[in-house]
Amino acid sequence: MRLKDKVVIVTGSTSGIGEAIARRCVEEGARVLVHGLEPDLGEAVAASLGDTAALHVDDLGDPESAPRVVEAALAAFGRIDALVNNAARVERGTLETTDAEAFDRVLAVNTRAPLLLIRAALPELERRRGAVLNVGSVNAYCGEPTFVAYSASKGALMTLTRNLGDTLHRERGVRVNQINPEWVLTEGEKRVQERQGNPPDWHEKIPPQWAPSGRLIQPEEIAAAAVYWIGDESRPMSGSVVDLGQFPLIGRNPPKDLRDR
Image (cartoon, rainbow, N blue to C red; front, top):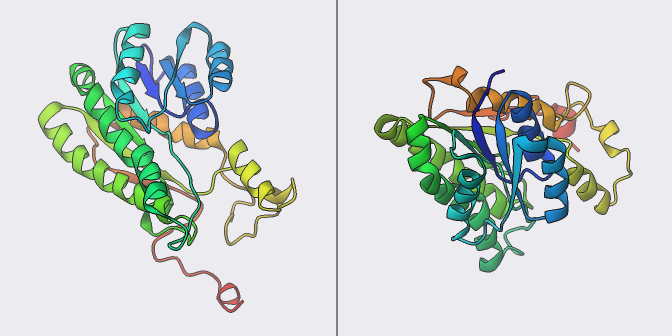
């Protein structure tokens, strides 16, 4: 087991990628603090994981939530070996429709909360020579027109990862790394696409330009990659940002017929 006896906090783990990471951590021998906003979803996930999991429901938009999350993990398991900052607020909005309030809401959860959680967990992480894994997005590099605030938040998170990945590793022995998933087929993504008018089987008809493998990435595949960065196999690496996608994002040239449309 690659995470035997470790205690891992996974924010936003009542569904989607976070849930997949929490489940994979347990499979690899860890105990997990499941976190989210929805008590019913969280209770179902935690119950399915048995005594290897505890649940903490909290809104990371509240700057006082970080110490509460850390305290919940310590109360349940007595230690913290890793922190996975997965929770994210996704608000679609263009330059014209993104006002100050919406921008602040997204940055509070996607960028400020990881910083505050790392700070709150740092004494325990330093004691265990632990690891932080931030879950970003390939949108950090530019993003889509309707992801103005989200893209900015993930770009800021990427710089925070590199900054703390250097500072904390050198000064405190705590590694900080990041994975940037591309398009992942979560239940939430299915609902969003259907609300936008796409048929229930939309994910079976993704053009090869966006899914060269013939399908979208599954949450479990992101979770498998996450385990490497949480565990001891990735020592002594810190400050790394790894894109998890089906094609190279930077410098990619779409097929000419796609550009001409």
